[in-house]
Image (cartoon, rainbow, N blue to C red):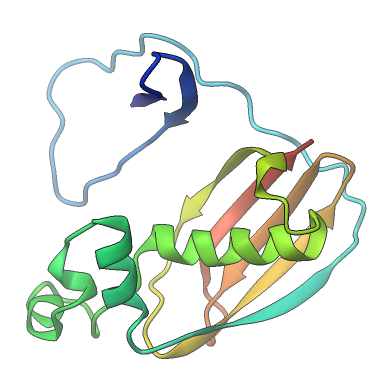
Amino acid sequence: IRLDTSDEAGQLVCRTYQLGISSGVSVEGQPIQAEDPPGLPVSAGTGKKAAFEIDIPAAAGHVYTECARIWNPIHTDRAVALAAGLPDIILHGTATMALAVSRLIDEYLGGDATRVRRLGGRFAAMVLMPSTVTLVVESAEEQAIFFDVCTADGQRAFKNAYLCFE
């Protein structure tokens, strides 16, 4: 899915390419693709590894829900999360990503978020609250940072991630 966000003057602010996978849902018909998404950045493998811990408070899901206006009760209502087969309420994947990106901006871009040009990755594991995740920078290069966000038990919650910047 391609989502374009424009300002009041109709100027493109950002373009988002999104893929969704639904477990247990059948697909009918042939796949249709209107356009190819841009290619993924490739790491030169500079091996400049670093790790940063990020604390996730117990109320992070509630705060993010209200601030982002993303209301899904699996992030705020324990009974709903348990009924959905989850171990407890979980942090939004986009909140996990935002916390990691904020830390990357502080550590590598001098706090200047306007330098970010592209961001991507795959949400792959649940982040429970409260907990601590680890931002693992696999490579920090001239115009890209490649990273993962790992849960306390070592699962990659946001993986194969990249942040391109100028």
